[in-house]
Every structure is written in structure tokens, then in C-alpha cells.
Length: 444
Image 1 (tube, rainbow, N blue to C red):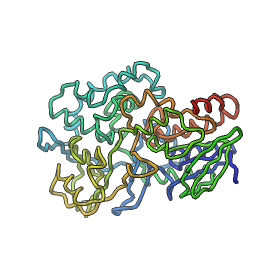
Image 2 (image 1 turned 180 degrees about the vertical axis):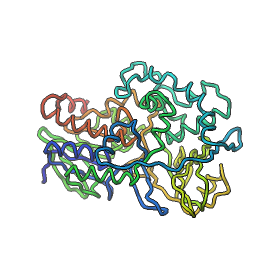
Image 3 (image 1 turned 30 degrees about the vertical axis):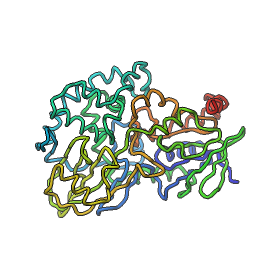
């Protein structure tokens, strides 16, 4: 049986960064990845004539960890074309104007909803420092939005904007998610909007993942899903693939919350981790790419949470075609590979577009994801967040789902990769919390 210092389960950004940082400390690291590619819930794939991001996409200089990596490797950042027209639903009809008109429409609601953000979360790097945050975590964003008693047009527009952010129904999503994102953008909702949905890597997320993987020097085995982790006093055994086994002093698990329990753990996972994985996150939506006949003017469109697609925008414009990206709150309401269903959904705004092709990836049905990006249900954040990243014996946990600042983003995954690498180093030096207590908690 081969032996390593650390086995990392998952070659997304959390796993790759952990492997790189541990490799820099002269650790022998093995990365086991279930898929046939690295990147996890990011995936740059050539479809519809372009390199499209089927998963995580956007980056920003307000996101410290990912921006440091972009600078480290000298990568370029770009953005899609600026929208020349915006469509939105109001009172059962479609309104149109420029993007600033829509932003002005939602500004009163956004401002009132988020005006106390920095009181709730003074420091996004320590999001649980305010004991009263449980009050904000106990209600849904929709409930807080309803409390504002906005005019119907403003209410629908605000709800549609939040569906785009959350990729899930606002009435399933904790209000604390909106506070966390806005706190990470210094309390400014417009900066939050820009930070989460505008800028992307020019050559795709695959380039950043490849740079980190190469620098790590780790052995990476693709098509090697982890099946079980068994701990003893001296090490841990990881069973993967068709019954292969390796041993390591430490194991890093980077699975998302919804599928954390797909691996068999011995000792078992703590009660909090099992409960959170069983409850599932609020993010249950979809992302679909749409190629239409051109030329068209770039546009942005918002509907309501009641529509299969809630947000649509132009990402690429060519001479003869354009490629749009769209999001919906519920993946069960639309088959992203069915061009007729997508055509009907787009018709909620525009029936003048000739749709040529559609594509995407069903992340909800992905056995190693089971979710899009992290959006917690009411009570999950304050009940589980701290425990989700707590080591259990020799098993450590890293994921963008468990980050402090930009949870659900590439930045959060990178943050968690750094944290877990430091945690392993501290434990080995005897400056961490130790293993025995963690094993005891896992069994209790």
C-alpha cells in the first residue's frame, strides 16, 4: 500500500491550493479526483463555438484570495459586453429601458434591505463574531423583502435580482446570505453586484486551476472517486476507485456540503456535518448557455422567481451570432438541453430571438456536486458554519462552501485551501487543537 503525507480528496480550487501549499512544505501529496478533469465546480469547456464556463465564473479585486492568485500567475481578466438594453417584469408586463433604470428601480429596496449590513457583520472574515446574527439567519430573504412593503414593480425586480445571486428561491434562502455577500463588499450593494457577476478570466478558470496544479507538484489521479476513509491511531486509509487503498498521515476532504456524506467515514462524521449534508443547501438552480442568431444588441433581463429563467445576459457577441447565459431558481423546472423548453422560457422577455443551440451542466444531478454555489437555508449558517471546517481526527475539511468571506465563490475555495494547509502544519507542530479531541467529538 502506498503511503503519503497527505491525501486530498477533490481537485477543485480548495483541493489544489491545499496540495500546493502542503507541497511547498515538502509534503508528499496525492490528489484523488472523481471526475476526468480538475477544477471541481468550475469547468471551462469549448461549446457553442466559445470557451464557456459551465460552473463558477466571476472574480473581482474585492475578492482577496483569488485576486492574489490572478496576480501570482499574471492572468488577464475581462468582462462580457455592456448591456445596451434591459428587460424586466412588472405587474404582469415586460418593461424595457437601460441597465441604470433597472438599477435605480431596485436601489430603494436594496438600500433598505441591506442598510444595517455592517452592524450585523462588522468583519466578514469573522462572520460569527456577532452573537445576534442568529436573528438574521432565522428568516428568509423573501420574508425580509416582504417586510419592506415595496411597490409591486420594485418587489418583483428585487426578488428577481436575488434569484440571480442565490440560484435558488428567496423564500428558501437565509437572509444572512445577502448580508455576507454585502459585508464582503464593504456594505455597498452595488459593489456586491459588480463583485459577483461581471468580471471573468480571459482564458477561463481552467488556466488558473492548471497553474495551481502544476506548481503543487502533487500526484493527481483523475477518475478516482473516494469511497471510504478509515482512521486509526497512526494514520488514515483512503479507499478509492475499484477498491484501491492508500495511507496518509492526514486527509483533506473538499466535497461540497450536499455530498459530504457520499464517503463512508470511520469514525462517522460529526452530527453537525451529517445534518447539514442531509438538509441540503438552498441553491437548487440551473445555469444554461444559449446561442442565438445575430447580430443583436447586448442586453440584460430579469423576470421573477416564478419563471423558469430569472436572469439572462449577453456574454459574447459575434457578427452572425451571440451567446447568452441564463440562470433559474429551480433546476427541475427546465431541461437545459431541451431547446424548445429554453426557447419558451426566453420568450418570457423576448420572442424575437432565434435560438440556435443550448447547453449546460446539471450540477444538481452531478453526484460529486449536488448543488451550484453555497447558499444556506435559515439556521444553517449559525448552526453549522464553524463545525463544517472543524477537523475530525486526521480528516480535515476544505470547501468554498465553508469559507468565511466569499463562500460559494472561487475566492472562498482558495481561502479554505490555505486554511486547511495551515491547520495541518499547526497540528504537526503541536500548535493546533490536537487530534484526540477531534476524534472524540466525531464519535460523540
